Image 1 (cartoon, rainbow, N blue to C red):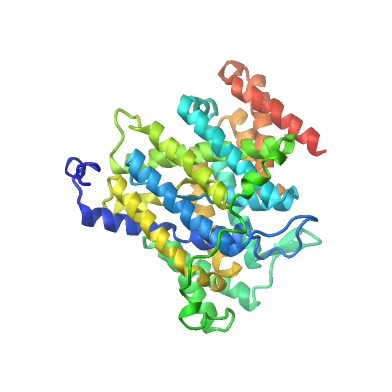
Image 2 (image 1 turned 30 degrees about the horizontal axis):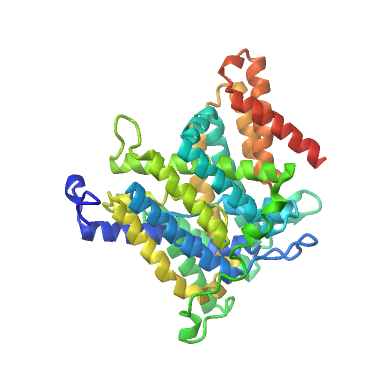
Length: 444
């Protein structure tokens, strides 16, 4: 085992790798509760006609197993200390744009995730994935990441009741004297404090403290006895295999845009995370990522597995940097994280205490972290600033990640051509320009 993971070469040992894996798990454990809540549209009362909710317990199981399988793939195949799980942002797109916004059944949405995963596998094996990544301008990649951050944070503010609908101004501040809103604000303050002072797993601990505060104040019903904390593994039956059953429903222009969005966001989410974590761990060689193909394949395969089980796109988590900071240098770190996700399968009853007020602070904090990409955009170049700004602002305002991407990708070729920089535009961007024009025509 030590030889396979090159412990001596990388200057690490079992104890260090184990603690790094545990640290990574604690840093990203919030996804176990936030993902089922998001995909089940908890807190949303009225659903479009013909659309039903996903089973929260089944999604919990799918989340844990997809995270475990993805992390094992990354650890054993690519040998990187990087953990995977259903991605934040992609789950919001799945739930709030595809299901809630478009009225597409979640079963068909899962088929879209499966299709994107299969396409990813092909693109990865042929080496095209890296080439397509390079075709999208870095400024737009950063804008998409930041825009998703704003969108996720907006959902958190909305779910908590801090921001509400207002007939006069469209949006407004909610009633801050409402007990549940005060609980969410308390959770946000606690999470900010923990993150600011550098507590690893601050988001997860913030959720725990908020849930406890809710139970102490009577706002959340506490679990009763041991059965309210530990139980058998939830059944995957409500979601397992639905992606295959409804695969024939994806062949529409609307679903093409959905699949392209799944592809696009996961493309850069994974690529950015791989580079960031590898850099921190000192694993980059001549500014290149060794075994990049294996790492991308692990990510692609994990998405296929996740979709089959019943969850949105599985991707690499930047929270893996917490484990690297604790000394993790090999794939054994990811293997340890995977084991903890499997262990978490027995704690599904705790979903009952993780209310929207408990998850809202986590969404807002993740939004803060993702919006940091704004600093890398070349705002002093107007032809760049326009499409980047439109991507960022349109996502929360239209309540759609896909619409934000579409608007920005339409304006980018226009502003660049008018500026005389047409030669800098990759042919892929012209293809996407046409696709997104057709997307709006179809919607109208």
